Amino acid sequence: MILEHSEKGLVMHPAILGIALGGQLAMLVSDQVPKLNVEAACRGSVAADKAMGLDLPQSFEKCMSDENSAQQQLGPIWSSYSAAIRAQCEGEATAAGDASYVDLLTCLQMTDGTNPNSSTSLKGASRRKSPK
Image (cartoon, rainbow, N blue to C red; front, side, top):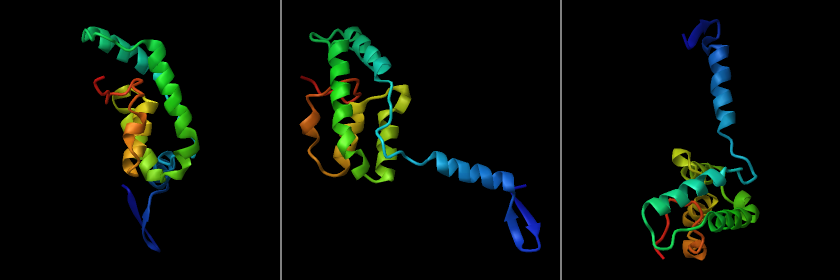
């Protein structure tokens, strides 16, 4: 039972209260750019490019370079976004197990009207690759 009767009325069971508070604490977003495993995503992106038979598939080195560049661009701007936007964008950038700083940067830029085209030359492991 979640609620218990007491002299003071209905009270949430301490174990449930702890879980509820712990869940909220887990939802807090750090003021630092999250650490993403972009190597795995780049390997998958390169394999997908090859499987699609692209004339100019992206190399692993270029993917990693783009991801590292996006990570560096995120550093100085990350804490200027609200925790809610950072959480939303982090969720989108890590969806389906793929992680991309390029997607994270693009998502943040789109939330504040910054021109996302400023980073479109970065493809990285982004699932939103523009044809070039």
